[in-house]
Amino acid sequence: MNDLKADIVIVGGGMAGFAAALAAAGEGKSVIMAERQQMLGGNATQSNVGTICGAYYRSVPGPAVFAGHSFGYNLINELASVGICGEPIMHHNGLYVLHYQWSQFHSFLEEKLVRAGVVVLKNTEVLEVGRNGSKIEHIITTTNDTKTKITGLAFVDCSGNAILSRLAKIDVISTGNYQAASQVFRVTGIEGDNEFTVNMSLKRLISKLIAEKNFPESYRSISVVPGSLENGAVDIKFTLPDIISDDAALQQMLTEKSKNYVQVLFETIKNNTSIFRNAVIENIFPMPGIRTQQRSKGKYILTGSDVLECRKFDNYVALGTWPIEEWFNDGGLSLEYFGEDSCYQIPAECLTSGVIDNLFFAGKNISADDKAIASARVIGTCLQTGYAAGKMATCPAPDAMPEIIRQLQQDLAVHHV
Image (cartoon, rainbow, N blue to C red; front, side, top):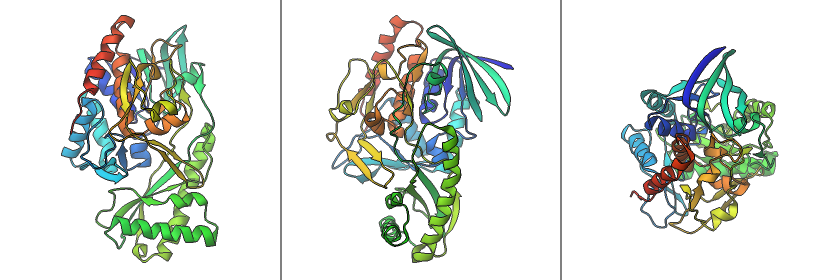
């Protein structure tokens, strides 16, 4: 067995893990990241969710006002400077999104981490947690059948499924009432340059197929990923009909089934719409976009009421600006809004374990009920909770935490236009 040591150990290389790792490295700490996939970025790259949501306040009319730490603001500007994303797009009802180029995103993330001195272990699964009372001392991982013991002073779980809490045998939030997953595929060779026209063509066809050919109701959600139509290529997203659970075997089956769904769906689209008659599939993204699963249970559980009431907390470390967005297996979508130019606050207690002193959470793994995570799961908020958790994990002693929280709040108080 190999042995590695670091000050901070991050589990999960999605956007929250990325932010947590850079936050900790920025404090001069040694950092190891364990990511189970072969590519960093989580759903942003493996599923290609296509847009960064939750990085701006909802405003009708604009302009777009950034919400978050300076870290997120600088990251978005850097992504724009290298052509990975453009200007914010008014999506609907005052919500702004940023379209990004998925093909360049994962290498950008990895290069940033490597330059910061973060040790990145890809294709790495966590098998065991070595716990001594109220602390985690190490984790055991496997990479290509090679086991490694990784010892750390603090651990940040950005896995999206509470892997460290489960292996440490502490309570998690597991309701089984998870949102429907989505699948994205990219096609080239389409004969249309207007996103609205392409979108309506798809929706009209799918409504007909559901009525006449017994296609799954979930396909009613089909849409063009905002901002993706360019040079005859477009990304298309639709909701999968399958129930999402915490069973890893079922998730693997879903990955295989979703590829078949895409092939059948695309052939039907190609044969029934002139816009797609010469189109071909360029890419079926390897992971279905699983929106929510079981989560870690922290000192406080954020609730849907907290979100809709824009609740404020003394120990807040992140802001949420996205509505409660829930997708259902019949293709339905529910959006519950709070006021324009408003936000709710996410307290440090949602990012910290009440049982394990050196365990922190971020991203889709924060301590939140089903309603609250349906808002806080978006990339813009995940960047914030990741950054905050990474900073908090570097705390040398409990009496130093209030100052770290104060610094995070001071950073959040700066609104960027």
